[in-house]
Amino acid sequence: MPVGILELGQILVEELNLDPGVDTLGRWMAHYVASLIKEAESEQAPKLKQERSKEAQEAIQSLWMHRSIYENRINPLADLKPIVQALRNLDPSNNVYVLRNEGTGYVYDIFRRLIICLLLRKAESASRVSGAIARAKSTSKFQNDDERALIEALEVWLGDTLTKEMPEARRSSSKLPEVKTVNLDNTAHGLIGEARKALDYLESEIERTGGKRNSNSKG
Image (cartoon, rainbow, N blue to C red; front, side, top):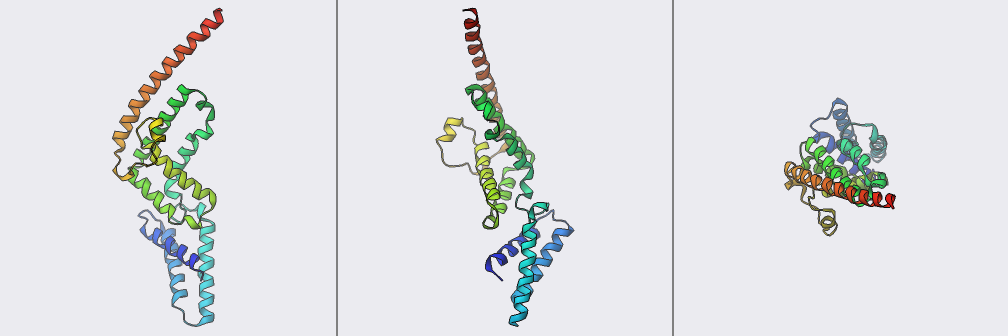
């Protein structure tokens, strides 16, 4: 059996066995794949060993090929679905019109990070999300380009969201915060404070630009 397929099968078995919420189907999958791998490795007769290896390889590849339909850890994004959906909706590249103005861009950035922080808080802890990312990365070499890019972006977004400094300060720092040590309540309070400042800034910007428009209209 190719080493890569065997490695993938062993990772899937381990992840399913470690998943506290795994269902009956997941337990059956773990047992089935583990038994196929064991038979392939223990078989001594060359012809039978080849047959067992082929059977195990096909089962592992079939599971992996259809990974997106599973709600267990065969799907590397299963534990990250709620966060992934929110991040896609809040991705600045999908809302470029709000970044054309300094004030609205400032407000959008703060509220985007605040919403993601609150979602992480609802997910119980940043360390849990960080653990889900680590699990997803364990099969990265078997994933397609879109999955790898999404997981890498999620890791960056997570660090960005949990950094409380202003955007200029964040851009000047290449080191992401240690996720496991972050207190999400404190982070949320800090972002709420920033949100108030952002709204004050936007209000003053509206007053400035509104005054100029009124002056131009009178002239």
